Each structure stands twice: as structure tokens, then as C-alpha cells.
Length: 229
Image (cartoon, rainbow, N blue to C red; front, top):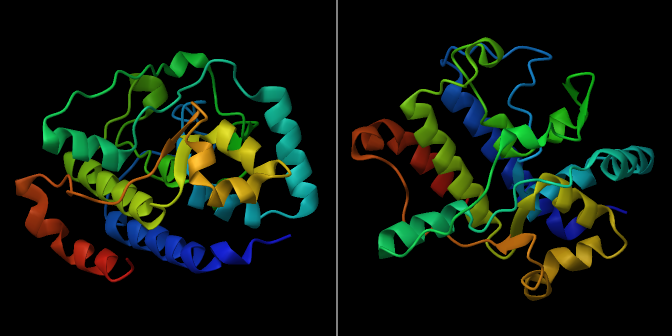
């Protein structure tokens, strides 16, 4: 059953994704089909993005997704202790930043099938933002222009703000939750989710992490995004 309560924000999320591709359309990248070096088990997503993804699947596709999670979900994976907007707030307040453990060697994303993303059209922004100007496999790292990093952060903050009554977690944990019988009840009950160490509550934007040297360049994009919130 579709969760119609999600639909207004899902429509806004689709617009945000479209704005992102418009913002980076002139950026030259080396990313190609079956280039999955960045597709690790450590990607996170918001509850809004999880709802969008699950809503886009047929019952049969949900069964296949559930099977993949049961068979390939990594035991060791990145569990976030803070969201992007929480990080921005802590920095602004001068508070201590929680230590987080994140290692790409823990394994690939369970959504990969023959080096292709099985949820590509509905993948979260964390995946869409992984762009590189060099071949990651050959170089051993991704090379992302500083301005693109600024754009990525701005969109991460915006998506979280749109989902400020929701929560964030590892992709595997989020999809497993949303495929469970009580998934959509969990989406609306953020206080119950707060007791689960796998998830972190989202926050609204308190300060934008835009470097002064990029402010004028991103101002038109800021204006477009602000109209959605």
C-alpha cells in the first residue's frame, strides 16, 4: 500500500533531485556505468528518502529487496551519530563533535547486483552526490571539486530540513525498517525511533555550511531551494 501522507514531500524531494542535476550539469566527471567503487555499505539516507524508495517499488520488487537485505546486509557498517544539520549546529555552538567509525573496507552496498545499482532511479542523495573527476578504482580515491562539495552539503542540509520530523540511518537499516510491517508507523513516531541506536533524529537548518568564497555562486540555487521549504 502506498503511504499517501508522504506524497507532498516526495514531490518536493523529486524537485530537489532535479535541481541538483541542474546545478552540476556542467561539471565533468569520470563516473560510468558499472563503476561502483564508491558504492559501499556505509551510505546513509533520511526517512523521507526511504519512504520515496519503498513507495516506488511494486510488491514483487519489495520482496526482492527484502531478500537482498536478508542475504547481503553487512554486519559491520557505518552507524551515524549525527546528521548534517546536527554537525552544522554543533560546529556553530563550538560543541564537541562525536567520533564516528566509517571504513569502506567493510564491504559493498547490498543493493549492488553485478556492479549495478538495483534501486538506481530511487537511490538516496548520498549516492547521487558521489561524483569524481578521476577514475576512483585507478586512483584509489574520489576527486570532488570544492564547489561540488559545497553543493552536496547544501542539498544534504535541505533534504534533512524537509524531513526534520523524521530520522536518518544506514541505508540497510532504513530499508529493513521500512519493509517491516510497522515501517510507516515508525516513520511518524520519531520518539520511538529515538530509542534505537541505529537511527538519529533529523534537525532543521540552523546555519548553512557555505564557504564565503562560494556564497555568491550558490545564491541562485539557495533561492530556488528556499522556495520549496
